[in-house]
Length: 619
Image 1 (tube, rainbow, N blue to C red):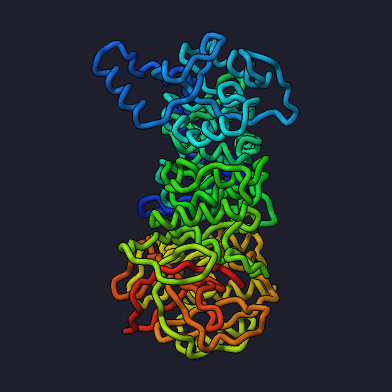
Image 2 (image 1 turned 90 degrees about the horizontal axis):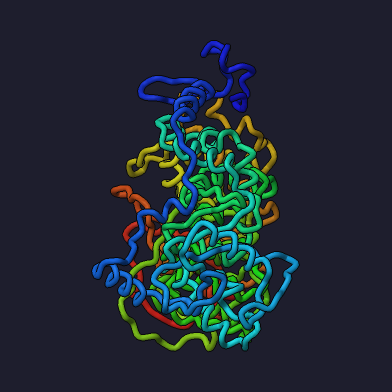
């Protein structure tokens, strides 16, 4: 393998290899040699994935009373399809015990024809005929089984139970022409390499090295696989994450378990983030890889689902919400294409909040202010989330808030719990980032706290970055790489240091120093930073927050800083106060959240009790 910048890794002595090294046990081995040894061992043993119908061999045949009863229980849990395709005709869904659900992208130029008393696409009929050659199970294919020429209410009824249809299927087949024998073999080898001790040693510490291991050096078959239109459609998200028995299937029936593909996305996403949102990685932007890396088994928080779906496309913008049904706990959302999108979004977030899921509000941090005053001006919308290149590596989880009676609040907005940290007592002048860093240092903030205040929401908290590059949890008051991390980010923003491959792959030159992986996170900060952005620091009785300057030029003294219902989801360090998530509400608009950011708590401070009011999110 010649993708490690070594002219001939088979002939060079170890001290001549210029591709960096990986620690295996207590010794260091050149990355090229470690990869070659691991690849040759795995390549001789790996087996191509089975074809999809082979996975049906162990399914129950429903010949015993016990198996039949289990099937009935399964049917009772999930809503049944209205119809399924079997032997060239439609059969009622309540007459089938098992079925295969099919996910695919509709042809851009649809050809319609009359079939079984309804209009269907010629594409769907060909798919049904093709798949039926290898199974006797009924098939559920939307363009055949959902009436396309009936009134909208019929389609809405089927749309509402789409998640149950995919969840209740025996198999889900996702049809991608890009799936080939080569792609199937490559994915199998990549997964085996990711189980190898070499990859485990590189993971997190060496972003470039782990990326090259996990992708066989950006293998062309992977680039082709991820280049398909299927990955770009909103509805395919729901269809891919609801059923553990889901497979990507090519035109020649080559099959790849979808979780094997999802596993590759994380190291690719890390690499994409380090080279910036403007430079494609394996042909795709950073936001695409961020989307795929968040695809996990349902159920998932709304905030994570937004990361997946809202970087995709939909023919009807409402589907950006309706494709989340069944994946997230949003029971208040009822499909209705006649509603304005704004109302559908408010319905989504109100429904999530009523279930104790506030993760959607994390996205407010990355959205610019605008002038709308209808109670949702910085509530996340698909078009705004699409252009946020990646989510923070820090995991925030919704806090558990007991039943609280809602108090009077805004006329429009979303019911949201919050806790007051007090009135803003000090406000800095608007300043560029270098001046803000100097100011915070003079006010005794540590480098790790400054990083968290400015970049914690978009890149990740310093404690998590330290853990990534050190593979250990720091002790309290141990700054780790915080100083170099912050200083290098500012140098990159000012142009005194480049974001070249030599800087991003410092581990390739100095592998013995694991912490050198921090340069990748400095680059992430530099890529997303707006050079003309002014910052303002605000301090209340409870802590300090740093926010972007607002064009309204109003003062914040007298405003309040409130905590959002989030808590840190990572490993906590004993004796270390974990940053919190907060928003600012102005004195002249107490029920409007004007900005969201990380709050560094004052030691010994306390907060008010939880309140629930209807809050607007505005500029």
